Image (cartoon, rainbow, N blue to C red; front, side, top):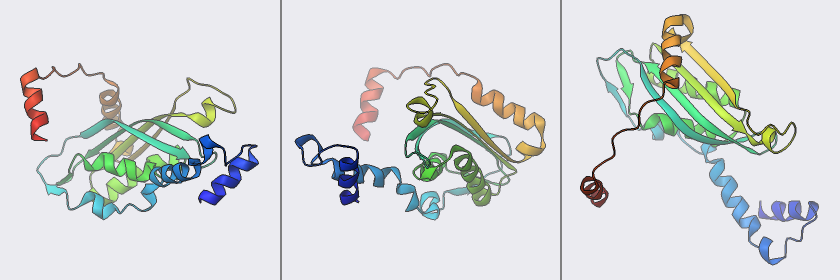
Length: 200
């Protein structure tokens, strides 16, 4: 890969041997491997048996999940927020697993539409809930830096499965909850914050 990157630099009119670019092929390779690490991720290892039997049948929402991905058309970043909801049918998943699932699919060459659907279908297939909803809102640098050069545009995509597709009231509740701005949580007293840091 590093040889290809050196060749690319030369094709762009640069000197791959100059001081500022000597280590660029290594850095770019490391960067690309990290940004596409989702290809090597194992969904079973991510979930790691974190499915629990719970008598809870109301909506579970994890919102404002930061994600970063690469557009498969231009290899430029797109990034934003992901909101995920599901209605359990006897099983819930550990909350930290949902952002990990988002990361697994985001760290691949993607289009936002497919990314949204992959997250929703994976949660549906693994948890078997009554329904799943995923909304993604993203800024695409392939639109902001090139092409139409619209820096403030945001692309929103959604995937609604199960009761979220069938029941307009459930869908409406989800959209209301993800766009409702919550007040900031009270700040932790200084002595408590210090104790929490000491324990980590």
